[in-house]
Image 1 (tube, each protein chain N blue to C red):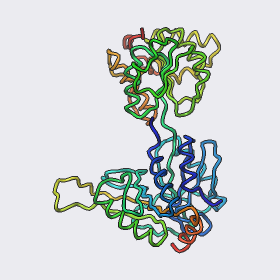
Image 2: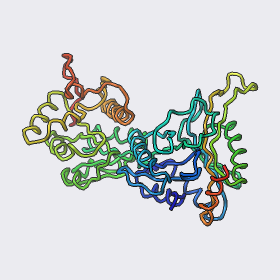
Image 3: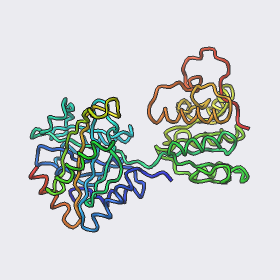
Image 4: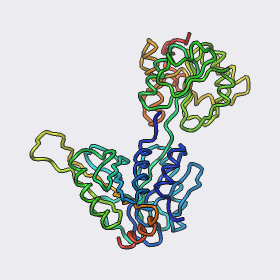
Length: 124
Length: 289
């Protein structure tokens, strides 16, 4: 049965939050130029380093993961831009060259979710 | 309550409740929800969560409705009092000014539902194509030997019942696509009479142009509002010129995609929807047996 593609990401996130872990949900907000995924694509990153979903390929996801780890430590969410630079090692490869604006949403365990999030928002 | 949390979003998704998820992705003012804060806006304009600035709420609801209709996510910048601002030229320029807020709107809709009324030879490939395109397919027929799982392995549900009763118990939503391909025009006609004017996103009925016009004529005489009939795609399908049942099913499914995504391909129904008839011979697909 088809389900909304987001459902399983939220189910996984919800289970991890219930265990007291943080998680980060990266969503493509806007794109310019040629990009592998468009607005609405999502990648869920868990505290143990596993990822679910995709926002388009290894290179940009590695950058997003690094930024998500930083944001998870700081306890705040943020809008970031990622440039899909030409890869000189792969001329003519799967180079896109566009830019993606990605919202990295740091999700907190429910017990202190709103409070932490409010503080994060104010310090942003 | 300030925002909608992950658990609540999951329960809405699991319940297949249509809603627009609105997330604050950047803000320049303390007068609104924090960055990452979310609200859920329902198609009727009701909402859960609170944006914060009252002037913004009406604009957020209006934008949510538009996003739900378009079925595409989008980012919108607002002034703190709700005025829609132009999107930033450059993404890099991400420092929001004090009185602006950027919101991400994501439509969270139940899967589109394809309802095939009539389990004949067009229905078989149509069901398969619909499933491939991630439609939740329901097949209805009053003949138990046709409406069987062996013929429709990819169907989400198969209903064996009198057409009228099956249609009356069907939940028709703005994400429902109805295809009338019964074995006899009297069944298509009776079904069309019941569903014309429903909230279905698409109603298509098989039949040659001549046959369709006869059916429309009878329905008008029976008191059906003619303006409702102009919204019916009949003859059904895009003008692909196909002849085999699979080709006709493809033309039907392609027409549904065109309607859903607001494409510009030409439908055979142009002959009956008030556009000029260019003298093309009776071009409707073969009638269902």
